[in-house]
Amino acid sequence: MRTALSDLKKQLQAAEERINTTKMELVNLDRDHTWQALHMAAAGACRGSTRTGGHGTWGNVVLPKENTRFCDDICGATKFNVCDAEVALIGYPGKAKNYTTTVGSFYNYGCTKAGNPNVAFDEVKAPQDGIFQRRVYYYRFCCCRLA
Image 1 (cartoon, rainbow, N blue to C red):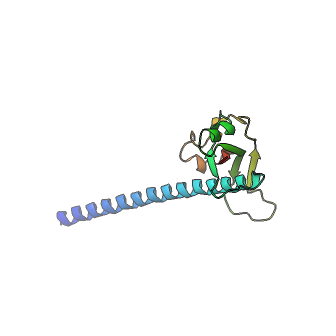
Image 2: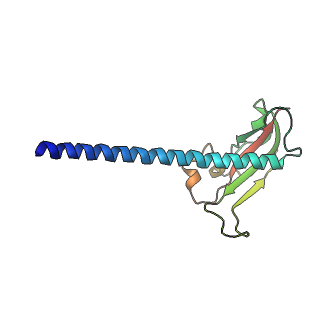
Image 3: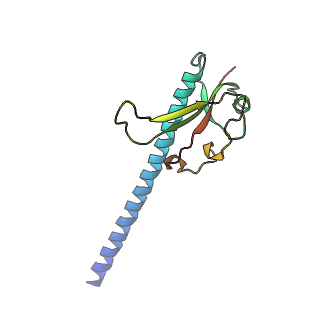
């Protein structure tokens, strides 16, 4: 009887561990998808912010904006060395219920100034779960292309 009870406790503990592992995997997946959605929005914002909408036979890139640097410098340090724009984006959680609901906001600070230096707007310096916080932080990105 004790052996059966002991075995049952071990099985229950193993099941709880699997559940906890699965929960963490789902949180990680949700986090990755949420960051990816922001990055796709940034790519779309860059596409709409450029004079030509991007050009050439290669893709243009979106880079995270460091809060104290200019996008001209950030782009210039890569092979995609021309800055077309800087965008700052935020999307609000939940589904829109009508056509006057604000679902997001944006800024374009341009390439030649640091803009708002608030470190909370810097994705690289943000906590990994910063994307889940309900604070109003605009994550900022540089829109870069090859010369």
